Amino acid sequence: MHTDLVAALDIGGTKIAGALVDSGGGLLLRAQRPTPPQGEGEQVMAALGEVLEELAASAMWPGVRAVGIGSAGPVDAKAGTVSPVNIPGWREYPLLQGVRERTGGLPVTLVGDGVAMAAAEHWQGAARGRTGALCMVVSTGVGGGLVLGGELHPGPSGNAGHIGHISVDLDGDSCPCGGRGCVERIASGPNIARRALDRGWRPGPDGDASAAAVAAAARDGDPVAIASFERAARALAAGIAATATLVEVEIAVLGGGVAKAGEVLFAPLRRALRDYATLSFVQGLEIVPAQMGTDAGLIGAAAACRNLGCH
Image 1 (cartoon, rainbow, N blue to C red):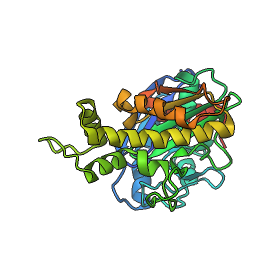
Image 2 (cartoon, rainbow, N blue to C red):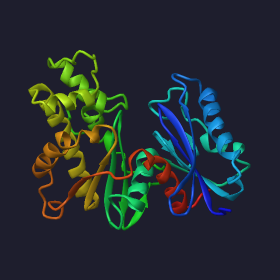
Image 3 (cartoon, rainbow, N blue to C red):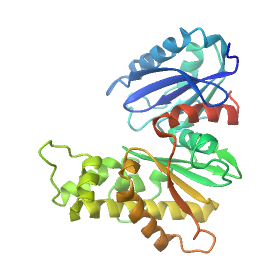
Image 4 (cartoon, helix red, strand yellow):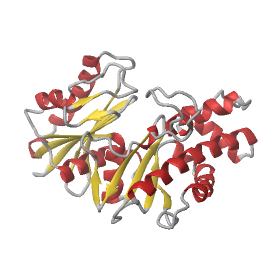
């Protein structure tokens, strides 16, 4: 029987996923529920409770020693609360307390989803063995996490590395976070698509107006689609360069749905980085795609739990 398992939770605006994860990062059992759209706090917690119940029904559950949570943010690891932008029913919601109550008081570690992704990529993915890394999720939002000195660096609240809300355009659009010209406001999937539509790009017969459709149009040479991705790439490059200059990371790892655009994003990103990462100690910064895929949140939640120690 497995005796050193972590129950990992990956909480986002679309789905709540759970898994039992062994000490080697193997996912032994999975459970998932949709996040209730516009749900009240307790409705969302009920969905999470169903995920935990499904995991707890397994004969392996007695081997679970702790719970690791990677949640859409912001999170407050000290207070044990979460206020995800894309889960309106959770504002300073006491998530740790709720999870402890549903798991018989097991120790729990809470980090932001970007930190969880960084933990996964550093443990088993593209940042494995690196001393300094910025790992990013570029999707519906833009999040990130840091590895500094060879260790995961979540910061006191669990949000360190949240690059999506670095301002890269002082006169840019207002961001839902309250800032202006944030990386996320330019480089997230919905904002890439919004800009393309605003400038005359139109979806094909299937009506798909997503960033993935814009990426496909860019591959086919559509100039408006190309320009939208190039602007997103410059925003990302500015944020990455600022982060690397501040804390001297050696590699930036990009995952998430927008990163699946491949060279439509990575080629202009690498070009733009040359304009922003100009100091000698950041000129060698590598930009690479993430390797952990859709399991990054779960594996990362388990890795953060093991690395940081559950509370």
